[in-house]
Length: 214
Image (cartoon, rainbow, N blue to C red; front, side, top):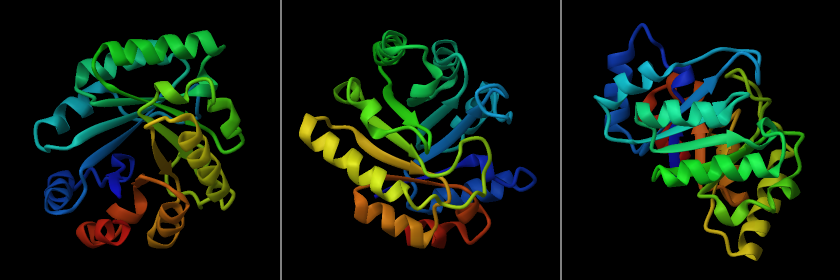
């Protein structure tokens, strides 16, 4: 199981200590939630934060862009050092635009992921599934940390796993929202490969919290 701590929940008054704890943990990815205040009603990180953290941690930098213009923002964050970009299917006006963003990210040599909101069906992913390295199931409404896990997400993970197997895709299944030791186990049993957790990790003993998710 890949654990991707979300820096949305990092205590920025104690950044160095918390990042030092991450170095001691089993986390191999670091998750960045980028919000533009339009696609979701919140603002978060610019590329400078990513550039700064790249200096101190040897991790896979997993960037989730919750933005209205994924073509523009994928470039900004790849230039800043992202190893993978996940954008929202709902942010694209049609399939053609979605394929264009996927192609551009792959042409830059980065991993590409597609995310869907809780009310978006897994079936909408079918045209793209073979082109993806990752699919992100949002188990809360995107925009804010600390929300409760939506139980119906388990069925979506199972449906997505079936789609991946049947299509011959190699995409990983990532889950983000309300992840803790209990919900994380449920996601893992349903077929998840990557767990994103913020509050559960950074509001507790970081090393032990990550261990409990592995």
